[in-house]
Image (tube, rainbow, N blue to C red):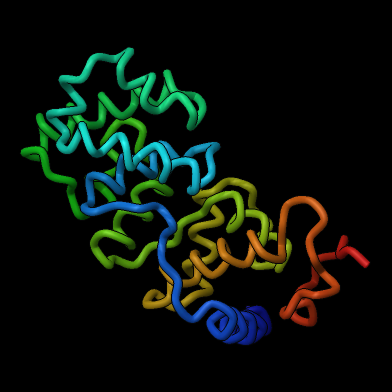
Length: 212
C-alpha cells in the first residue's frame, strides 16, 4: 500500500503539471442546471450535452418548469443525448422530488442527492464538487478504466472503486484527481489504443497490455 501511495504521488504531480486548471466540461449557471446536465451526460459526450442544454435551459429554468413541461416536448429537446425516454422520466421525477422535498433547491449533501430519482453517487459527486466545492471522487468510465490500469484498484464496481481511491488520495484532492483522470483518459489513456509510447506517466504504470 505504501509503494502504491508513493507511486500515486508521482502520478498526481505529473497530472497536475499537465492539467493545472481543471473543471467539469458541462456548462451550467447553477446547481440545478448542472444536475440536469449530468443526468443527460450518461452515455453521451459533454460537447453534445452542452449543445442541448443551451437551448433546453433557455426555456426551462426551474424544477417546476421541468415538472410542468409536456413529456413529449422534453423528449424532443433532449433526444440527441440518447436514451431520451429514460432520461426524460428521470429528470421529471428528479424535478418533482426537488419541488416536493427540498423547496425546489438542489441539496448540498451526498445522502440527500442520492435520494433523487436518476441520481447515483457519480452524479451526486459531480454536483457536490463543481457546484458546492465539496470533495468527492467521480467514477466515470475514464476513472474506472485508468484506476484499474494504474493498479489503484482491482474492482469493477464504481462504488468500490470510489472507496479504494478515497483511501489512496488525500480528501482535499478528490475533486481534482477525478478530473485529472478524465482529462488524461480523453487525451492519452483511451479505451481503445491508448497512447502508451507518448504517455507522460508510462514509467509509473504497471498496465500489462501497453501499446508498443
